Length: 385
Ligand SMILES: *Cc1c(COP(=O)(O)O)cnc(C)c1O
Picture 1 (tube, helix red, strand yellow):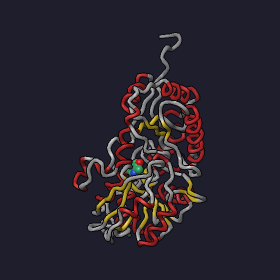
Picture 2 (tube, rainbow, N blue to C red; picture 1 turned 180 degrees about the horizontal axis):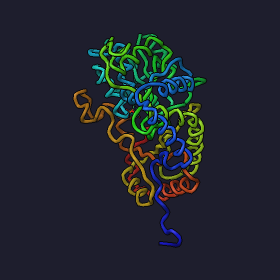
Picture 3 (cartoon, rainbow, N blue to C red; picture 1 turned 45 degrees about the horizontal axis):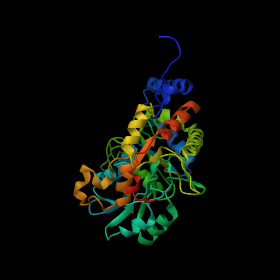
Picture 4 (cartoon, rainbow, N blue to C red; picture 1 turned 30 degrees about the vertical axis):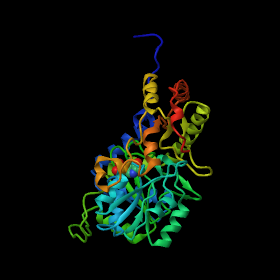
């Protein structure tokens, strides 16, 4: 076939590293180097990545592990959170936040979120405290930053641990600090689509508590120190050498990519102003690294169909809040219990946003959204924000 394409290529939801030829070559080289040396398990690449990631975040230590979920679960175990304990989590988050609590043997307690920021607040946490509450996990969802000071003050008052779920917010700032360094520990995922993503699964914990970091290093690798001397019951939860090498290379570009995400998000927001959807942005004065670009519509499914027909990929993060998932039926919560999270789950729609997005792709997303004509039953829906 020759000639002019009548239908432009669809706008994908994300574009991974193979879409950047120079980066891809560089990554293939570092992967080949690790494979050549057979340096697959822990070792120098993991140690260097840990040093570099700790320095980047501004924390004393980083511990590389197998995933973001394991980062959270191991941290809870290392903090002594377990059976009989309750851990407060937001109802609108990726299920992993709650699963990590369950994996540690504790009970996740989902709470509702702020209607404006969609994030957990100190007030929601305070309402859910019981005598069994040991820990809270604020989630910097979509790359937006939770208002941490009131949560940290509440935790100090009540003797609670604070573990940040920063799996969607690598590099985001809260005041002059990076997220992950504000509570007892911060947990990151390096799943391929995250702001810092590997070529498979990976995760890390950052902390200023050297005792906690040491405990995590034991837990991630069979409690072993030295070899074949097992001090605590751990598991196979290590960051791979191959992933560490990929992540070291990509970490050097993270701030630039986050800056591209901020600039694309602000242009897309401006282009959608006055249009048929509402953009979920950062709270005034707070940072946002736009892991996802989320809009709201009372007719979410019709919007998604319209965008699909226009060649714009979308996704929903997430269609079912934690307390209404089949997996967490036994928490005893039902429809109506956490109304803001439930409402969001029916209205939110994530549009494509990734650092290598072209001007043309951005313009096509904006145009496709603006062409959406709501069906007119909007009046039945009272605004919550
Ligand atoms: C991705 C993610 C996790 C889990 O990370 P994995 O590496 O996939 O285990 C946890 N919490 C949030 C908010 C996430 O987005």
